[in-house]
Image 1 (cartoon, rainbow, N blue to C red):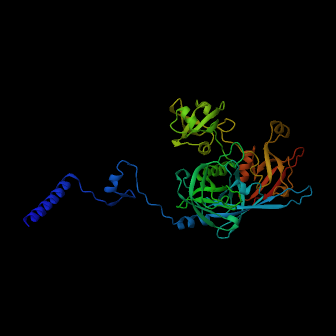
Image 2 (cartoon, rainbow, N blue to C red):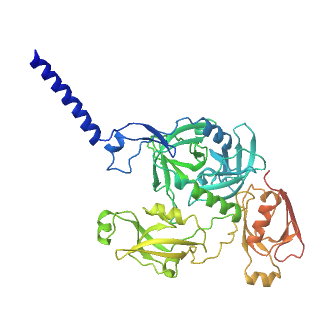
Length: 477
């Protein structure tokens, strides 16, 4: 009996001694949840498990409640009906065809952004708000290279969407597409950002810019020109295209990034045409083999394969074989991204370019130029009023100025069935004043007509006639 008691005492003493030694040598570990900087972290034991991974964080998903974003965006997305006059014969009788799409009100005084392909060649544009109000819109300008157009309706205090920062958009982020698919008004669909900087080769022309935001939010015919917004209701893109074999949505849609849209809209509003800036280089994407040969750490960047003489890059000392890796401290990974970043600037503006040469990172400041290697802002071309009023203008030659003894602009063409056509104005008419204000060139004439509120009075002369002609008409209401 005494042996059993002694054995029990030894066991108890051994257990107590083990606990004492453990408590002295190993610090107690606590597991607690704490809020730090708005992020939830697990500390203590779990921190020890991940102590070799200092970047590990436990993040909770963002709320998937899109009600606020939908309520902000839906009233500012409009339905657009554009009528296009198809050519008839010499007796007239042309038929009218139509296209439909969406648009986004971007200012309370009635400026609306949409796609170029929605209003291309249209002679009559009607806009229907989410509350059923209908307006006649005028085309301020259009840019096929980005598929963006700007419309204007005469109204104040309209609901509008503010521009967000498309550069801050992240893959996996929730987004909403708002538009009018199949003429179903004010339709909202949700998805995530699937990719950025996508080039799907749908825009024609060497100057086209394709750096789309790709999403899996459902977009169908009629959504073109509608809004892609984040969960705060900010405009981060204009829905433009889908990839489909059936003609309807099959999983992916594409939107022009809002930072590029904002620049195009600003140009169209201020100048009537887009002020495109160029680096003056030929470019191509890298692959892993090329990157290895150039000593690059990865295949992200854009290889310069040609430098135009007297272009912006040539002036700054860039050469063929250099690899552009950044613009204004923003990393550049592909040709589409580089085209988008440069497309946000105007000729004469300066950008900071980071590039790779001979296994070294270099930096230069480059003053961008236009397609003609000029740093000047482009002047009006003369066709800015063709869609709205129905005529095109041109500057007088020096010989015409001397012969006619006039300063003004000549009407080069008049479209059948247009507002100007109804006045009986003929090609060759020389406009010398707009609403009593003298005009000497196309830029002055276009600016005067665009800034006129409604009524227009165009005074001038025909060659060989001494009588002053006056044409009075109203712009589209």
